[in-house]
Length: 317
Image (tube, rainbow, N blue to C red; front, side, top):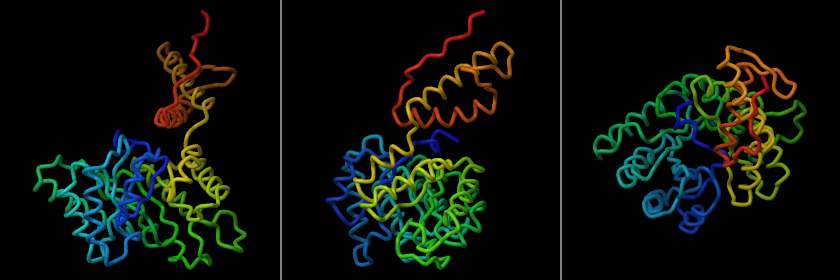
């Protein structure tokens, strides 16, 4: 992954763009990314006012090191082009990413890439700096996810959208992000999760899971986050401050695991510098495959602010 696509996205907080109170409160949350929503969380009559509120929040807010994003309306709507033009022209230098919802094919992403390039050129912004996250939300999008992942160098992540996806498949559930009642086949979302993850990794992108909408179901949230984190996802959307600590914890490696990853990297570097392609560390064999796994764990630990507590000691000659 590039430095841009490797930015930490353990927790991605959704904030209604039409709520000044929530926009202000979001700046204080310990999350990696905040997206100011112009789509589902904003009523049609409030779209224009929400754009103005989002521009003010981006320009005047104190977002610290968070990734600053907006979720625009999808390309089939009458609001889409104005979302991009108004926000990027007025606050493009304070915006890192645009979340593109309901992506059904690569042309959706290419349209946004082209429009962004035109606005950047007109405003004198750095070309290509604003990234894109493509939200996969239905059967059509999942079926074309490889082409979507390859559609633009601006792409940073693929995001699974469970609500629309469940509807597009006709799943018998009204609970976003939870297993359909009566389903006995294991994890109903496993295929979609894995399909998106494979496409993301094939093109050097991150993979982010959608929200667990039952705010007070902390056990369900923890299980959901733990499952996709184990699969290899980089993070998950959260809808409420009470979900943040749980999701941060599940996507951050334990200190012992992080320490071991750093030891593997140090040991591998030491031994390969001496012409050894494989070596022993604490009774276990390490090689190039071990190094690749350790790189992932070490990068996530560093992004979570962890520091090594154990030091590699070369073996005595």
